[in-house]
Length: 306
Image: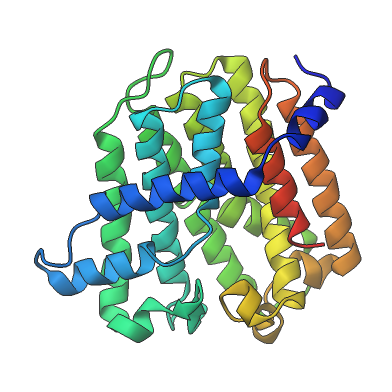
């Protein structure tokens, strides 16, 4: 087990931007190769899928998955497949979240949202196809011992269903225009965002054959990071520009969204992000080897809201 000083010293030597660039190139190349070609029928659907997936996103979720696997000591095709499945499932949630029947957004990842470019029906179907494809890809790989072969699919399914992000999305929509409620905000944040980030980190550990204690430490890291991530998003929606975000700014307030900022205020939100980040970093100290990528990713994510 490494001390806090050891973690800080190792992090000081780690180049996060170089790491992100390298991992994004790997992820983008694999996505481009594995997604159906636009020349394959139905061309319109496959073009819509590729338009959204290959947009210039940050790829934080697949990068977190690969970093967790590396921390355990094994990052192979199983971990990469898990990371890719997470990214296309995440993209499906963005496509559906942007629909006129939900948030009705016009901008995502710096470009027009899919329903504006391809039509609402094709956007819905592209999201459906990406959700299905995510589990097709996971069905091609098996989790290593001590896990059952289907554990990766199980992790993602639990995070994505009615007890996970879909449930969080339902509660998010229902809470619009309602009075401030801290319990509701916590439920939305945990289910709509944190559950998938938690699953992302766990899946990286599982793909690498993490021990129970290693997986517990990664889980604590992922849960705290997931909560911090959503609060940072709430802060940025309130304070950043559309150009910086790559999507509409100030939309949460305009729609009466139930956010951490709306309930607790900006300063309390920033304080909570700092606390959650410290807890995430503390969880990494329980691992038998250092994880500079996971530590620096946590700092990077939290610093966006400062």
